Amino acid sequence: MLHYNTSSVTHPSTFILLGIPGLEAAHVWLSIPFCAMYIVAILANFTILFIVKMEPNLQQPMCYFLSMLAISDLVLSTSILPKTLSIFWFDSREIEFNACLTQMFFMHCFSVMESGIFVAMALDRYAAICDPLRYSTILTKPVVLKIGLVVVLRGCILALPYPFLARQWPYCRTNIIPELYCVHIAVVKLACADIRISSYYGLFMQFCVKGLDAVFIAVSYIQILRVIFRLPTKDSRIKTFETCVSHLCAILAFYIPGLFISLTNRFVQNVPLYFHILIANLYLFTPPVLNPIVYGVKTKQIWDRLLRLLTHKRT
View 1: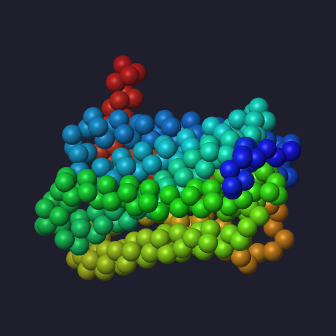
View 2: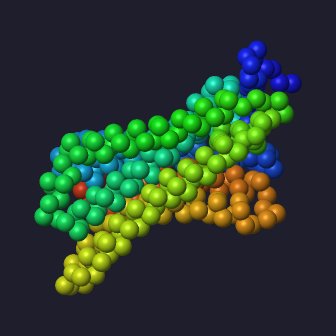
View 3: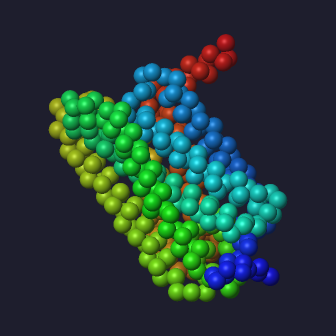
């Protein structure tokens, strides 16, 4: 039974998150990898933040952007995974209407922020490789702080219409969401109204915002590769390219699952709902786990500092 507010626009007091329809019997087993990913994401990202803070050699633009990425990953995973685990472990499926909209805002906001941070990192690599003599004067600390502020404001402004639009619609069909969390399109599909504005805005965000970010990153790396291929020796080309490997791996982990979801939703028929939900969860939960590991292994100063910390604790 739905319980509605007395306002002119009817809202359910709560939504019911089904989890992963079709795999309810496996929820307890699925909680094991989800919980493991959350623990790794928390520990690894806090470790990155601690090492960047404590290591003077890491007080540089790329590591500032890496710290922003770690904070974004922490907030993104924490806004979703605790509720996901409560569904798996305690069958706690109810979520209040306002809490659902709050989760929606944070999820979309920090996903956009993460995309913006990758663009900032691409700018950093472009400046470092294509204009190394002016790198320290281009990306000064004030400039990095301004870029970070723009990324945060952009994420907040672009994500704000999601809960705002979802609040405008009347809900008179059902309050059951066949998802693990309050993703925008799954919520507004429950509305008994014309939700084309919500759908169009979702497409705008997916293709115009993140799509343009991906294009900017691709153009940056085309220029970077042109410079790398012009280097005189093979060793110098490899050494220069290695400075981009961690960033490229993080970008692939962020964008490829999203592209795969879009393609399967539009062109692949008769795919079980649980398959789409699992892929969508990989899209959200994998980057917070992989990003700190990739950067920790590929960034020599971070790896060396971590080894010194571990060695010091054992002695």
